[in-house]
Length: 208
View 1 (tube, rainbow, N blue to C red):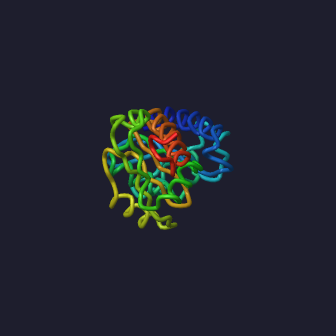
View 2 (view 1 turned 180 degrees about the horizontal axis):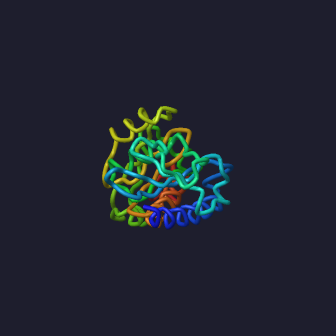
View 3 (view 1 turned 90 degrees about the vertical axis):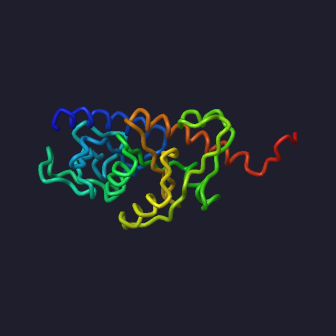
């Protein structure tokens, strides 16, 4: 697992810097994870309390299926975010190879505007999420909770394998994919889709 952890740490640091630069991980907010193995489930998660634009490959914590740090850590002084529990739940339920959690403003505003789910339809950018451009995709919105069990249950209740994202109300966005690159691409596409949908809300189609 050590070789995989070294590779995962480098990838997590690079993607965290990229997303911090986009304004999606302000302060020390947000966290990313990579699945290291399935049986038993182990994830490498970015360490808590650090500036995500300045992470190194060593700023990771290995967690189990509950999101708790495993005893054998390269740096026992590092700790995972409490949100690692939801990363692990998503990895288990969705089979994700990577999970991205960002505090993207467009997602939070969209979740506030449409608390029953954010409907995205008839847009070419949907192809970036594995959907047709004439498809309709509803990104679920779940109530925020500090209890990752409660949050995980809400995620799982609304889980749709064809929709690789969930908005946590007044908090942030979780997106997943087979690896960090796909998860990042999907997050970028969702930002565009949320911004477009918010900007055109109230427009009457076909009216100049």
